[in-house]
Image (tube, rainbow, N blue to C red; front, top):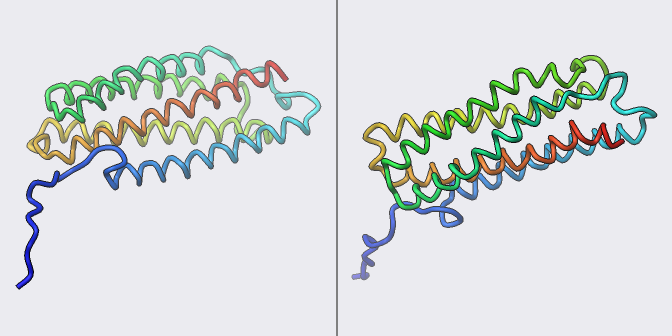
Length: 199
């Protein structure tokens, strides 16, 4: 007869690198990051070929992109608190942290609607316009993806699912992804709004 090992003391869920979902999120972010790098590389390459940058368009207006950058940066402290609360498995704080992050996820999207016109070029005007709109669209897709995940987690945390420890791991992974969304916007913001001014 073989001895059976008692594994009942092992945790049922994990956070960070101990969780497979964290690795999946990291892989997803790596793929997306490479996509951003490829488009940014195409933007910079096109800029080196052009005699004047931006191509046949005025400089983009700074205000909407700057407001988006500030809103995203303002969201980071709450996002880090939310991750900490999730690791502490504090359902009340996690619930209200998710509500706050939902609101902080909606605000940049509202401003982003104005940002597309503030770049002062249409997507079909030329290659510059196509690349700028593609970068904005790609980042907008990331904002929408994380907002959707945050809203779903918010609803789940106000139901009986808040007692499921795995949900806290999901919240922690979502906070990890939000950091990526914020940090990718900073170089994109510089590329879209400041590089044309310095070129």
